[in-house]
Length: 417
Ligand code: RNT
Ligand code: ZN
Image (cartoon, rainbow, N blue to C red; front, side, top):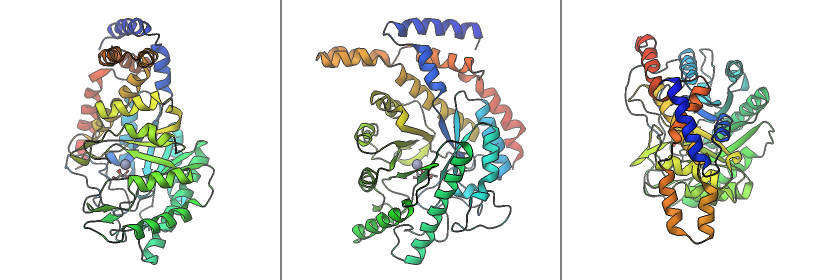
């Protein structure tokens, strides 16, 4: 797109939004200060560097598009490529299985901050902050139950793992001078009906109590609820009710993954309900198709409503935004860009909502007017503002990034097989 044209369109958009008293420059500035945490696992189909095997344990990646990152250097090169095309601050979200193990096998109950020192340095050189995740899937001891396992030896193995991960996150947070957000998701559940629902949940509660007892000032823990995992369809120990209760009672951050709800459920409704009782939210912005399929995040109603609810609740500062999907059927670099841009567009549209006017209509009982304006707002020129945001930050505008993704595929990804 031509610079001249982008600027002209932006000026027109700015004037249009000003009619509602909305300052587009301010919205852009807010976007420039809203980090999005890139999930490292889109680059390599959630394989990691521990044992080089496909993910198992409740989740599954589908597709075999060529060019998967096979080692730490390739993964880093891919992340560099991705961030080179994106405006606005990014973070990088690592799983424990992406440690720098130096060719040795380091089991989950042996992992230490030193296995992530290389990542910390690498990230700092790029101005990227790190987030972290314990990894209880894809391991011989994963089975159906980890932290909720009645077998003490298996349970203790995972408790030890999760404790160590929290210390790694704390080391990262200290190094980067900004809290590292550590997510705990476990796949624990049952394929078929179980008569021990209460028992497993009670065990999980006790395991979490033990894990979270250690005070670590440079990290924040969050707990991710889920509907069900693959092969674990009948029961999920860490359900929404379980974690909503746990997080509310213990003042822990709740992770809301947009793929972890019933297909007809309005996920965004959970934002205001949870925020009244938990300190903060971690968002895993994803796209479920029929189930938790982890398709690439899009600028769709689900994503838009999520951020609109966050802004309406005036809670942007209480949310950590991360992406979570793994599509192995298309160019993985492109998948990152589509997802980040979709999240940014959704955020921007939420910042640009004529909220004062909508609230006024609502207070006055003018419901036709409220509905009409909500319809009109959908086609306000947000795209011109987003284009200008990218131009201003020296990044490709609109579809201009396609050529770069294709070039990287030709020159780098296609040589990997
Ligand atoms: C799984 C959860 C979890 C994972 C990552 C890899 O259903 O969404 O967040 O996707 O930890
Ligand atoms: Zn998730």
